[in-house]
Image 1 (cartoon, helix red, strand yellow):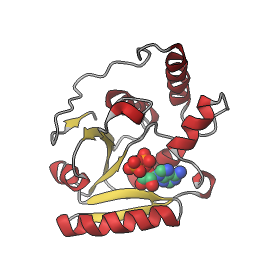
Image 2 (image 1 turned 135 degrees about the vertical axis):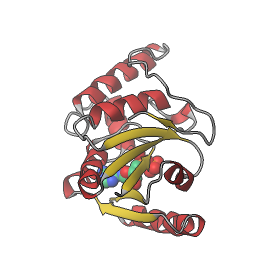
Image 3 (image 1 turned 120 degrees about the horizontal axis):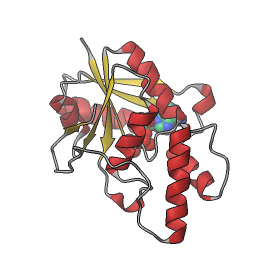
Length: 186
Ligand code: ADP
């Protein structure tokens, strides 16, 4: 039984991420999405919200669960007993980044393999940054994200414009943010 971890910021998850998750879920017995609990200041969605959106976007994958984590990705992988870390590659810049981090990770955790899946051609240009920029300028992002994520983004952008606090996303139970701790959301 091989469990794989697909870590990322996922702010928000888009169709390029979903494509990688679907393909990884078909390769490995279990796929765990690791939502990095990054400082919220530059993010559109906080950790609980990103976890909720990933859960909605990947609800069709029965062997997929979700955790949030802080600290080293390899420690997250170890704590959930994942033997493989999955990442997506769009271009040479992604490759150079993943290659360097992959070697550092192997030094720290030689028992964990890295599996990089090359982006499907239709998503090669896609990033969370592009999706947020286009949505923020009232462009159509429906081809790039799950409909529920498009809806959540529209709500969040409207809130931000109104200067109000976020309140339009489902509250998630059981998400903790303690450094070094993991919370399962599967
Ligand atoms: P991070 O901050 O870890 O890079 P992201 O959410 O931006 O988090 O990306 C998570 C993973 O998904 C990374 O491995 C990234 O290269 C990959 N990824 C992002 N966009 C795409 C895409 N369009 N196609 C394939 N993989 C992608």
